[in-house]
Length: 412
Image (cartoon, rainbow, N blue to C red; front, side, top):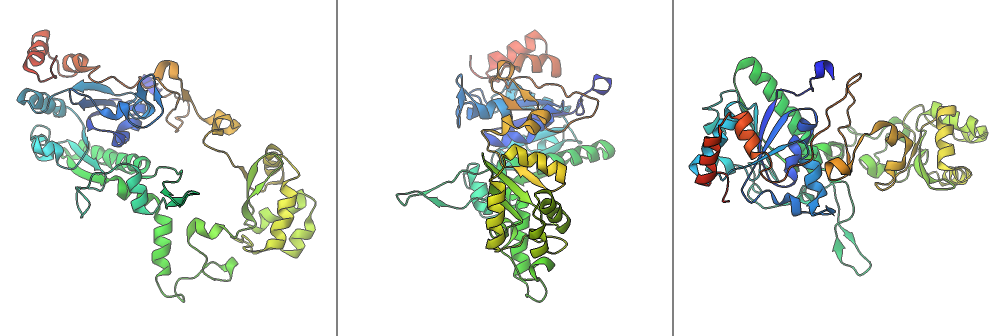
């Protein structure tokens, strides 16, 4: 690391978080920011939520709260609120991940904290955001994916509706769009001396990440002589986004002799390279395709030929062929076997369970010639209370003892 300094060293975040939205600051901690998680004396019950549970603590907590310091404060006491204000005084960011206005009701909202720290960047992360008819509705992470249309209902063999397996979008998208906005606010605050307040709904983030589908539908709502399909499809409208991939042939999944691969020769040059590489120039001569974006949709005769060709080699043999012939072929992995993929093993650092409680993926961006600091294990509730009070706020033993006696740190 350059001069032994992490990229976000010197950035301090005070976070009042519950459950999944704590992800907003995980990458900040990974990059070296000091993230102080303020918990109630009872602690964030994220430690008991979801599965797997590893030695009594959830994987969700181990992952989302790694690298953070935990201090317990009873914010119903005046002494606890005073400590919170002092933490905010020298912080860059305060994050509230609960229903908007929760901290404001305690006298610790942006309007209160900006009086003690004019440069404070205050961010509220909630389910549906601070406005709109859903703002007060209780919710959990999958709600933002169903709301945004990212997840559709499935039915089992007995006709009961169920939530299908899917990638969680809202809870994972919000940290990235929110984190970008927070850093932008900090940069401006350091330049101007003026803080700001922002709010983000995880549902908003889910819809934003799925922009291609929703914007395609909006585009198709316009007249057909204005919004068409692409040239390779004869300008005929195809179903939007990935729904239009079902009938693809030169861009499609195929079974190999031991698994599956994804074939993506939608450009004419790549298609020609493939045909020459497998000794089937007759396929190119018969179906040369358009120069760009030609998936040969609905061409079952060609699809049957390709189905038979791809069954003749293993997935790994096809991946080697991809590089040799210069035609795009990709692995089709699962969340279970991705860790065995050589590209994954070459790219990802795994934080081991022996030190971190769970085996976890480290921050995925590589700083060339530098090594990111390894985050500390996710804290137990209040694990760093004394450390924060003494080292961050400079309290002496008598002051810490007085706070403990007053109940500001929770009942003993």
